[in-house]
Image 1 (spheres, helix red, strand yellow):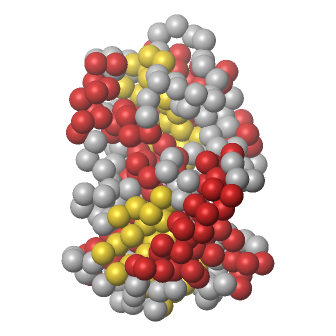
Image 2: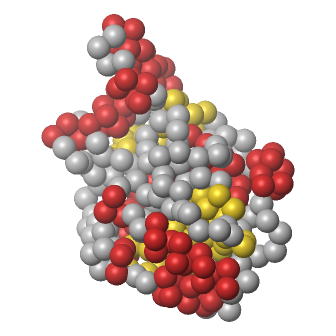
Image 3: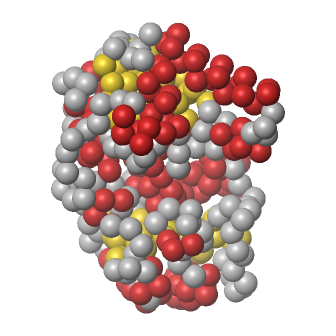
Length: 320
C-alpha cells in the first residue's frame, strides 16, 4: 500500500490530520505513507513510526522568489515528483488550489478531497459530500479516508518523541507546576490580548503555578515580572517539548492547543472567532471557553477557573 496525505499547513491543522496517517498505518503496517507539507509545519509529523517520508513544499521560499525561473523549475519538479510515487490512495485534507493540484498531479489510483475552497479545488478531485458545520475536523478527515477504504474511524495521535528537545529545554524551565501559555495566534481576530494574558498569568502565579510564555518571533512580549519568557527563542519542536512538560497549557485558537491535546496535556482553549465545535483541540482532558464572536469576551478569571477544574479532573472529553 502506498498512500499520499496532502496537508501543507497550518500547524494545528496538520496535527488534526495525524489520525488519518495513523489509521492507514494501523491497517497496513508496512505501508509507504508520504505527506506533502510545508517545511515550517513538518516537525509535527512523526517520521520514525508513522510517516515514511515528508514531501516538502517550500511555499514561503517560492513566494519570496516568485519571479525567478529557478523557482518555477523547482515548483514543477516538486509537484511532478509525486507522480513517481505510484500511490494507491491519496487524500487532500486542505482543499485549496495548491493542494488540489498536488493531489491531481500525483494521480493516485483512488483519491478524495475533503472540501473545495476555490474553483480549482472544487473541480480537480472528487469532493467528500458530508455535512461539515457540526462535524469536528478530525472526524471529517477520517470520513474522507473512509471513502478510500475500510479504515478505522477512531482518532489516535502518534506524535514525535521529542526526547532530545526535552533535554535541551529542561534547563530553561522553572521547577514546580508549569502553566505554559502561547501568546499569539495565526490571525488577529483569534488573538487573546497580551494584557489579558498578563492578568491570567498573575492569577496563575497566585495559585502556585510557574508561568512560561511561548510564541514566535513575531509575537508581542508580556512585560510583567515572574514568568519565564521563551517567546521567539525556541524551534517548533522545542516549543512542543515545553508543552509536553507542562502541567497545563493555555492558548487561543492556535496550533499549540492542538499539540497539547495530541500529547494528552491538559489544555484550556480560548475561542470566539471560529466554531469551537469544529476546530477545538481534540482533547482527552481539555476545556474550551467560547467567546461567541470574540475571545476577548472570556475573562482571565474564567481561564484560571478552567485550569482549576482541570487540576481536579473535571475536563471535557469529546464524544467518540
